[in-house]
Length: 274
Length: 274
Image 1: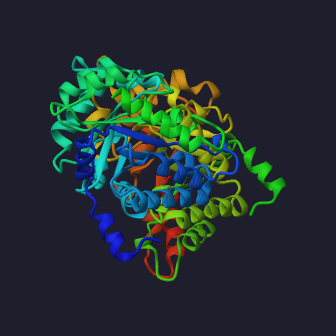
Image 2: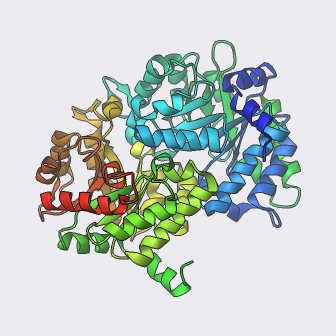
Image 3: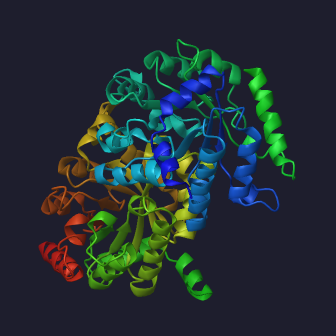
């Protein structure tokens, strides 16, 4: 359990300050803690696995991004492992950003409960959100001024185009989402976008529409996105603005007892490419 | 804990059969178990409150719909209360449908974990999903053939129009969603749509585009949707096809110790209007 004084510090963490600090140290990578229980090395639990990964890599990365799905599927004990993972990051690697990959969105009073879950119960710095219900629905998240909300814009999956590429007023829906977030939703300067690395052309267009927003970019690694193109098309004018996420290719670089060491080696390799 | 034989029965529950049975008994109402801890009557917990509501109303309604947000915000103990609430419905009111209001969607392997959480860990019969990532992303939910997926189409919140009403090829996005779900996603005959009662004209248009899909209709009650219009515009050709959700107006009909009795009275009142 976090001490009371410590908890206050935690709630005062400002996502943008943590991001800027990491970017100033040329750290752009984010490790997705998609700790699928069926893939964990023998003898580890979700929590001990995450702790080993975090200890082995935190000095090299800007952020950790646990995805709620992999914990929720384990019931209340999974939820507890998620909570303790975040507490471990706050204790061990407090200069690393914590992004809760939740892809939530609901109507007003319900979104307020989800926001409370993400920012107060789990103590994440940022959350990922789905735009389909509009700004009004997810305003309760945006009202946490020092917490960040990354809105799904163009996702990295093959089926993303079914709705996201539909043309509205001559431009794809994902671009409308980017523009609304950049010009309307960002009053508290705490919005970002999720833009898949698997669609570099789209990344370029979206950066043009949202020149200053931080982008969370999944899809490099196992999903095949190209790191060089992400860096070329995704940076903002200051040469920053990116959190590039890697999950499976890091977490499961080795399935043996050297999994944490292998994860570090993989992250180092990617860091050198940047 | 459910016994092993019982658990097997639970996993074999078919949402459509439960729905049809309820419709044949003229039951169309669904109680949203939005059991916000700050609104619970003195001396109750989320679980004891839910149990009292379920006992007092289950013979009158077709479904219960717990919204995950109100449990997740209480951490692992909230998650446990949610799980035990569902187990209580399975034990006490097994002919009632259990809809997990989760509004989930993620990419493939992550959606599979969410589906496992909803259908195996929590043992819900149905789940609500967000369409923004496309069919491919949420196929892992649809692959559970005897479990239902209600896809957000036109939501009941004031800000829904920001994206859902945008015109694509001359028709609103929500209508495209309805058509895709009705004609492409429904291979396993286990899709439904979420259509807010607060937009009766849209409900009419959507029923035309998806003549046979079950509709989950929130927004009657506290949100101001008109029950008569929902019945007029929302039914399918067989005169069924509806799950009309009521939450706050039922749960918090009284804040005193008579809350369960008051909930029953409110449900009876609405039933008589139908």
